[in-house]
Image (cartoon, rainbow, N blue to C red; front, top):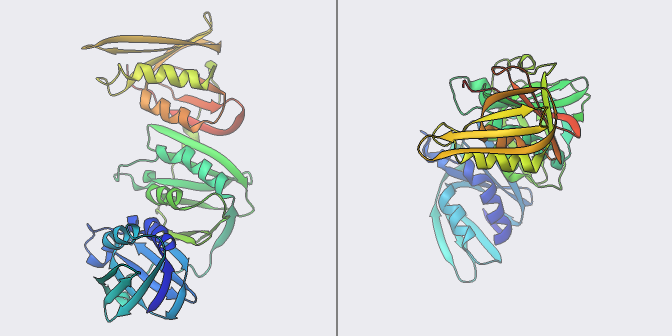
Amino acid sequence: MNVQVTQENLSRALNNVAKVASSRNTLPILANVLIKTVGKRVCVSATNLNIAITCYVGSKVNKEGAITVPARLMQDFVQNLPGGVINLELEDTKLHISTDKHNSTINGIPADEYPVMPHIKSGTNWSINPKQLKSALNQVVAAASNDDARPILTGVNFHTSNGRLVIVATDGYRLAETKTINMKNDINLTVPATAIQDLLRVINDEDEVVVTNNDQQLIFKAGDIELTTRLIEGSYPDYKKLIPKTLATTAQIDRSEFASITKISSLFARESAGSVVLGVDDKKNQVVISSIASQFGENTATADAKVKGIGNITLNSRYINDALSSIDATEVFIGFNGKLDPVILKNSENEDYTHVIMPLKS
C-alpha cells in the first residue's frame, strides 16, 4: 500500500471509527483499526463484532493494500500531526507514516486476520432525513436500559404503525416514544442503544441516511460513513399497555419553568435517589414540586399552570429532567391518574412525542 491523504480527513475518519475498537476484547486484533484501499479511496473501519463503523476518505492511491494497526495509537498520532498531506506506505506488516517533518513506523497485524461483519445480501431499504433521525433518536435513547438482564430493553425499537415509523425505548421505569416519517415498508426491529449512540456521534446533518436491514443486521449509510450493527433478538414488549388512554389529573405548564423548579428541587432529593413529589391543584392552578433532605432541609417550588383535577405523585427528578430536555416546545402537558399509575409528559404543540415515567413508592 502506498497512498497520500490529508491529515484532516484521516484524523476525522479515525475519530469516527476508533471508539468502536476495544482493547478489553478477548481478540487482540479488535483493538486495531483496519486501513485499506478501495478504488481511489482509503477505507478506515473498526468493529467489536456487534457494531462496525466504516469511513471512506478521498486519497491518492499509488499502490493498493491493507493493514490493521492499534486504534488508540493511530488515532492520537494522526490527530497530533500538523495539517497537510500524510504518506502511508506499507512494508510487510509495518506501516510507515511520513510528512514533511515526521517519519514514524507503526507495527500492524495482517488485514486478512481482521473479522468482517456479514454483508446484507437482501433486505428492506428505506431512508430518512438526518436531522429528523437525530432528533427522534435523541428523544428516546436515554430511556433504553443499561441492564443486560433483559437484553431486549437495552435496544431502541423501530416499527411501523399506521404507515408511520415509530421509534421507542424503555427500561421498565420510563418510556419514550416518537413518531416520525411516513413509511411504505413494514419493519419491526430492535437496535442496540450503544449502536444508536455511535450513530448520533458520527452522522452529520447534510447527508441523507439510507437504511438497509434484514432479520439479523442493519446498516446505516450517510455520506462517507457506514455503521453496521447486529439486531437484538426477541419480541419487544407491548409497551402500549403502559400508556393510559384517559387521565384524571392534567396540567399544561411552561417547559422552562417546570424544568427550573424540578432542577432546584432535585438538589434536596439527593439523599432519596432523586425522589420528588409532583403536585397538581386546580383550585390554585399550580404545579408544585417538593423534596426533603433530612440532613439539609426541604424545598417547595411552584409554577402557574392550566390545571384540571387534583393529586400528587412521587417521581424520579432525573427522569423528569431527561423528559423535559427531549421536548422541544414552549409548553408541556402532564397527566396522571392515581399515585401508582404512570405519568405522561407530552409536547403540548405536537402529539408525536410521548414520555412515560413510572412513579416511586412514597
